[in-house]
Length: 154
Image (tube, rainbow, N blue to C red; front, side, top):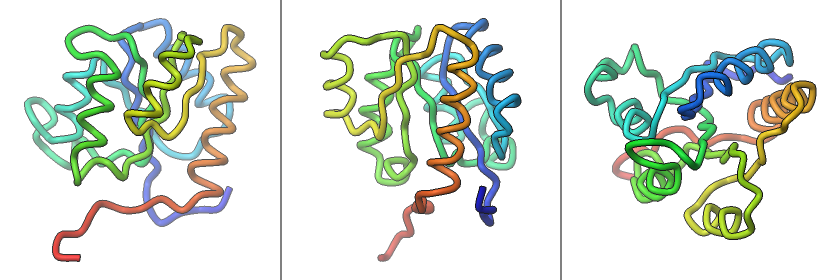
């Protein structure tokens, strides 16, 4: 892992408490650098990203360097949220990896059309989830260069 100057905040949007627990365990077991945070639905994800409601303080809701997004959530589903993130000039640079149970070609193609950076079907086996977390960490924080927030006036 190549150390970076920023904290690697990974923000996961998933309404399933069991999935959040499994991802937390897999994230920790895989040795991922950084901090994993959760929101439970699409509306809460947008509140976090735009510092609304309980996420008003930027210090309490640091900008994520990666978003893990479930598709099927209450209030606002992953497709709607992805569309809004990628349409927002201040948010569209944040990489979004769709991590969902779906394997439907229409979901895969649809999220790429909306601007997703990757699509991963949630592994059923825990050891495979650990491998996915490790691969995400290595790729997004060890190999690629991520753009920072958009600067106005450029």
